[in-house]
Length: 73
Image 1 (tube, rainbow, N blue to C red):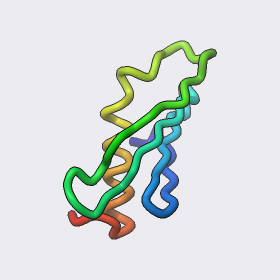
Image 2: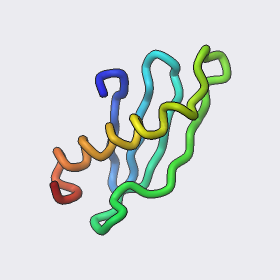
Image 3: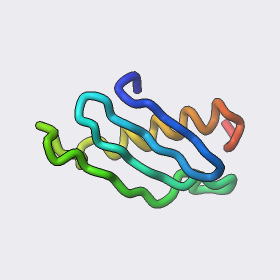
């Protein structure tokens, strides 16, 4: 998860993948499923597409949301 920087504001989170520059955006909810929706702002110049990064981005947001006490562990 070290390749992502997660930023949480209110009920929304962004996970920026540093090697590629893709930015993933999710909604955070207190009830399951806790991480909802999801869009990506794709870096068109990246060598790697965003498709294989969705799971890792979601997991990075989940870890940070739990650490912030926004969702149960």
